Image 1 (cartoon, rainbow, N blue to C red):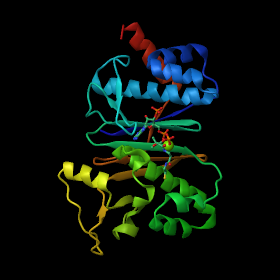
Image 2: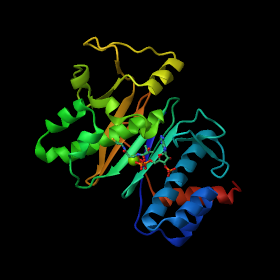
Image 3: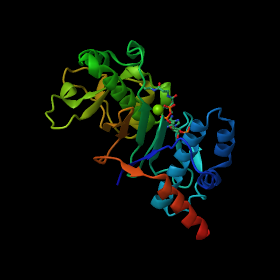
Image 4: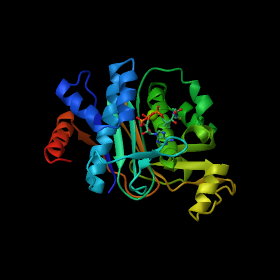
Length: 270
Ligand code: COA
Ligand code: MG
């Protein structure tokens, strides 16, 4: 079962809590945390790894300290002991988000919503996404920008290629724009134009490029499913899976709950 967990990062973490969180992460993470200029960056980085370890410990039966990570050439982490265990983490502003479970690739992105010059969409989004964005009412455009941004990032994080996949080589849009589907809730769909790396990946998986309704052989409707919801007034959340059901809503994890779990594990000698 795929779950999405979110954790709100407080402005100050009590020292006993911070000590146990720090002692639960890798040495690299501890060293990185000590180099951040801003405490909030250290909090997000460390808590992201703690949340991941606690969840993976539950999924695999390994102690949270026994878990080690390997990264692909674009930086996507996987579990060293079990490359099939699926998870992905994101942190921004006041929130950390973790998606985990199932058998297929997963991606998640949370972004703090800040006022920006929407012209940057032209640099990052595909023409279809820009048309969709421009058609939204003026007071919805910033929101829509962050929706598309987080959806796109959840997708590149799921496939693990990072920004090596050009951001304008695929479009994530409401399904009714792409396939004419009539669905109650807004449902998102990704179409991908031909890209050597992705094509290679799909062929490894035995999938074929197929033609779309207009017969363009280079456009493929991807099987990926998406989740997109604001976390609060200032943060947008999106998640992506290559297959399987995404949950209806995220589960909120508290700092206390995580602390208690780590103390219990420590007392049990794990
Ligand atoms: N694929 C999937 N996950 C990755 C990854 C990759 N290639 N590289 C790193 N990650 C994971 C790591 O766990 C990382 O956390 P850690 O560094 O604390 O271990 C986490 O994703 C970071 O995600 P997030 O908090 O969302 O960071 P980000 O938004 O700064 O970076 C990346 C996102 C990883 C995709 C990065 O390639 C990047 O630089 N993105 C720039 C943002 C952008 O242009 N987005 C496009 C939106 S249209
Ligand atoms: Mg991000």
